[in-house]
Image 1 (cartoon, one colour):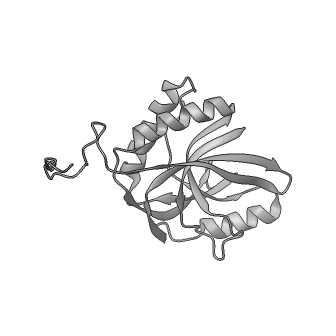
Image 2 (image 1 turned 30 degrees about the vertical axis):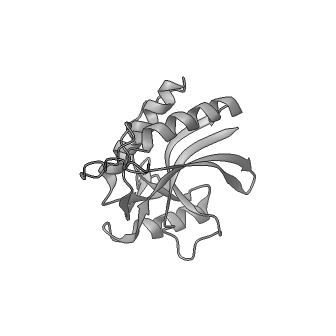
Image 3 (image 1 turned 90 degrees about the horizontal axis):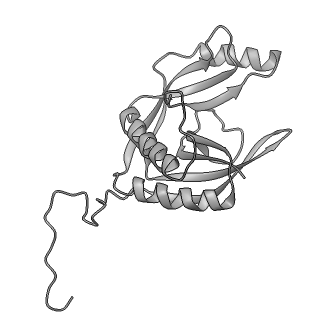
Length: 189
């Protein structure tokens, strides 16, 4: 299956073009086997569980490779960028552990708004890129990482959720990420 790991975020487009959820890709995996997906899921779950949920703000607009020759127009991340980078680091560790390649490029947190495929898209890109550089598109709390499959179709990719891995704020020794000491079991436990 063609797969990627992501987090759910608000769609910067008004109105959103489809009822499907908007996402921020953390790692594109490409074609992987069902067995690799299962092993990756175990590894990701273990590595993200210690993290606490955190807030992310979708802010600003940019383009790849640049605003003069946009191929992809994106909304960036304001608050929460450091937490996303830590999350991506843990996902890269999980992928490496199960033998999947690490991403060679540095992570750039972004939500794809538009892929420029022709003159009409180029005009829409110019409109998006004229937005104020600090425009906020909303905030959300990141509570889990989603493993998605992606089916390429002529009209665009169709994504399907395969699994979800919660950020629980639980240390690997089973203790909560809180600073409170553990409660001793009673004689009835």
